[in-house]
Length: 179
Image (cartoon, rainbow, N blue to C red):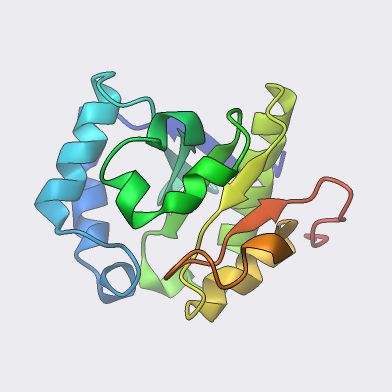
């Protein structure tokens, strides 16, 4: 794992920090839903009402972003089935990942790619085989960051996933070398 990247499970005490990040323009551009609703979803995750696993990621011992892992099999319910019917076309054991940098000043510094690569390494060590991420294809900064972390567009899904670019982590691809 990257030595300057660490993960901690989100707690209720972290929710004001995350809510503050969600109010920032770079989050509003790509994170759907209003802040109060999204924080309610994360609160449900913390309380075990949702199987999604939420984490803060830290860079040099400072919380700088949010990352979560969610199970495709658990997303095969409404409104997912109507909004993202492609969830039915993935293996049951697929894990989805979402990531956002907190402070805008930390965008385009390689932190997101490093955090994602480190998170993927943890998930792989736990035995996870199929990992996806689904950025908006117009979010070129995110797409490039995810490619640096070893994710590639899934050719069979191109043009079939609405407003997302479905990408899979390719363990045989070398992730971007971080120095």
